[in-house]
Amino acid sequence: MAEWHPAPRSIPTDPGVYRFFDERGRILYVGKAKNLRNRLSTYFQSPVGLMERTQRMVRTATRVDWTVVGTELEALHLEFTWIKEFRPPFNIQFRDDKGYPYLAVSMGEEYPRAFLARTRQKDGTVYFGPFTKAWAVRETLDLLLSVYPVRSCEKATFAKARRDDRPCLLGDIGKCAAPCVGRVTEEQHRDLAKDFVGFMTKQDQTVIDRITESMGAAAARQDFETAARLRDQRYALTAVAERSAVVLRDELDVDIIGFAASELSAAVTIFHVRQGRVRGTRSWTVDTELEMDPATILEQAIENVYEVDAPPRLIDVPFEPASIDALTESLTGRRVTANLSGGVKLAIPKRGDRATLLTSVTKNAALALAEHELHRAHDFVARSRALEDLRDYLGLPEAPLRFECTDISHLGGTDIVGSLVVFEDGLPVKDDYRHFGIAKARDDTEAMYQLISRRLARLATERDGMRYPTTLLLVDGGQPQVNAAARALRDSGLTGISVAGLAKRLEELWLPDSDFPVILPRDSDALYLVQRARDEAHRFALRYQKSKRTKVLQSELHELDGLGPKRVRSLLGHFGSPTAVREASIEQIAAVPGIGVETARKIHEALSVAESDG
Image (cartoon, rainbow, N blue to C red):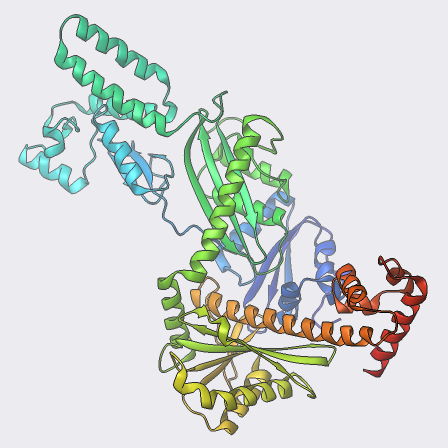
């Protein structure tokens, strides 16, 4: 146990919030627990029981503090507050960077205004949406102004019209009641705004039916001008209503949340359903640092969704979020604060229209996740920004249009292999990938020195045929690996190449002979690019190592009497990997079709001898 790890008996068993700190006093991670002792003890158990990135956080930390609170609800609130305040590097940060547009009506103003908004304020303004496209908001607004001609101009335009006693173009064409010049009173204009909000809130058929009746009456008395105006109004309201199709026949108010996740990212999508119609959709993406379980990510997503807005009474979710009782109580409290009646219920619909819609929302979350990952990998602007940021953060003379990333892989110091992957313009160039067999090395740094030395010897002859020159060597590792690569670069005599290493502890970049790492922002495209290169080099090294082990195993098996290619393929296909074959017992080997007990014993003995010789 590390010196700074607290004794289990010193940790209280109450609910609370804990914070891990690094040696510089920076908060690495904020978490909550119903029982602090039980939760914190999981971090200080054998590293085998922890995920890799969780191990990295614990190894980086130098102390942990905790704050005891009265209830799990208080812990939920305090955790959320501290994550927002300190933005710890190992906590997840939700990104909602699309700037979803809303249709807004400023009911708090003397003369309410209808307009497109990108953010929500608590100033008496009523919001509808969010919409996915700004043009949809503008088109909806234009249709509704022909029926409810409320003011839509900016304050300066409204003041100028009042000063000049002359309305704008919208007033002249009937899409504004022109309160600025007194065509309607303040009360009449507010009534128009209330009708505008009322229709957007319910969008029921009764308003359209009422206009249809009035249109028929006007036509009957041969008032065709009024009938034509009412016809246009009916068309406008019908067009707006049809855009929000009925998805729930019982006219429920419900938010439906979908969730999708990959190894390092997650996405949350929400459909806001009001009166049975989808009023808006929204998506968030997040890069997960620690291996947080989906229930915890969903809990924090719901906290983010309703940070500003009060929730509806019913929220459908794909599975139960963490701390569901405390979360439900917290959401109910937000309704009370907003002067709304009724508590909040989190439900998992299993059948019917809500279950069908939840499936659709979940598919949208999966699409949002795929779009997020595809955008970061292939968007030209993002790649260009990533390369420019790498230049600036690492102090390079120019952006690394071509860089190479290397990794060392081994099994307990044996079967050492190396890999090299190449990126140009931020994209992998797989034809230029290379792998290296390393016969013998004392440790990773010597293996890295050998790999880089061999690569640089080859690079000196390849430079003339390259599209871009290699200007950066990125190694998987911290300062020891970086210094080994820098020494190989000096010994090679090549110039114009820089070296950096990506350490796994805090995903930080190290430069040769530097006392402090370069910390890239967690949500930066530059960090995503170097992580992708490191992961690609790691994957390529593991694939080569597995291929080598398979060939060695096949060679050993082929030497045994009675084992032909078909039986060797059956063994590998049954166990899935050379390591699994070596670790299998005689009984397990004998269970493979075509392999008897006597043959299984020969295989087991032969592989055991080969293992001990190795």
